[in-house]
Length: 199
Image 1 (cartoon, rainbow, N blue to C red):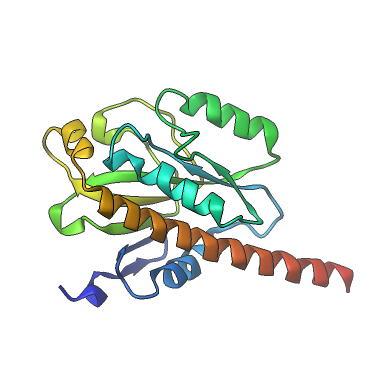
Image 2: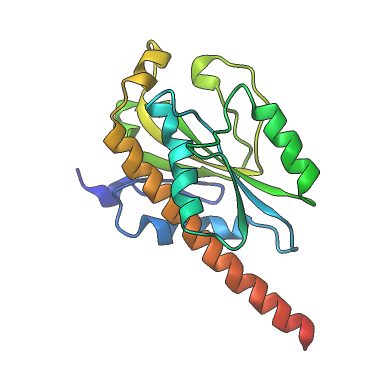
């Protein structure tokens, strides 16, 4: 497969295979214009559970990203403290209680076509978690990043539980790398704004 042909860019939608060269830099550059210019609390909400291999993408990415010690993005949802269907509403209430005007990035696993497995997708709109399993959950985020971990269409719960851990871990590392690049760019943007305000 020619990985370069897997990269697709639209103004509010970006998709690329997780093995795409420089995906972290490319994707972070594409989504930075979506972030508000005003100083707000930036929140990364990693959704999923460690009880299902495929659904562990979010918590794994959250753990990896937290280990990178971000300066501007607050982390909710890790392997040790996951944000999942049962505690999602409670977690969102906590975020809005503890952060002023939060801007949320929702990160989650998803299912899709066989040709899309391995794709990382960023969209400038809220995430609707639980759709693959027909769960009625609240929308999350101002934007979202999802990873297609397996094929949809039949026995989704079983498919998620039988997803290869190696794929999920590799994709989670790439998602964390994307957010690390975003965090660096936010640091630079805030520094520039501070200097401008001093002049």
